[in-house]
Length: 210
Image (cartoon, rainbow, N blue to C red; front, side, top):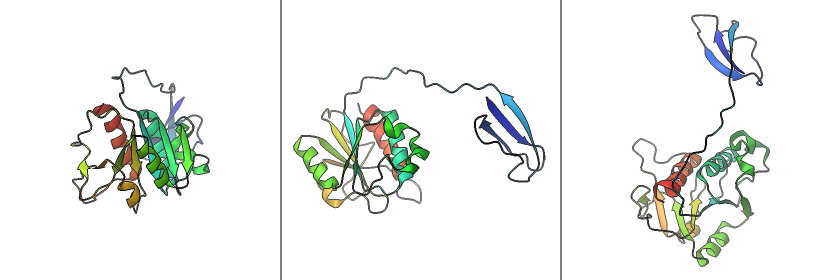
């Protein structure tokens, strides 16, 4: 059941919805007046099966010293939706057993395969020797726009490297990468939140370029 809360004070007019399983407010948090409450039948939204073109790639992700648990949880949720094969958690990146992960992972932290490596560089070196194509998500003098990168014909497994929110990807890992990609920015800021950037790149690599 969905509950629609509407403040009875017309000057406030706050309106929002809650599930009947959530904690119910007594008065309006803005003006402290009582609510009018409307009950609306509401079934849990079920994701329908959508036919998509066959994926031609296996994509894994190396999370290089991501410091925010919330960002990592969000990355897990996006990885689940995009069909990422595995997340390699490296260095100080929080693992799914962190109690705050559930806030943004919402269960996806247990649906996406993952492992932990204290040294991301060693993992990158191993993957390079296996013939994996390493893709670095980083803006720099030699980086290419995600939307201009010549990746259409690549069928090798890909390893997408996503770096620290402040310092970026470890330079020694970046030097091993076959391509360095950035997301074009048209505003004042020169970069996006790491979990948002990951989502854009993951879907572009998995579907638009497959």
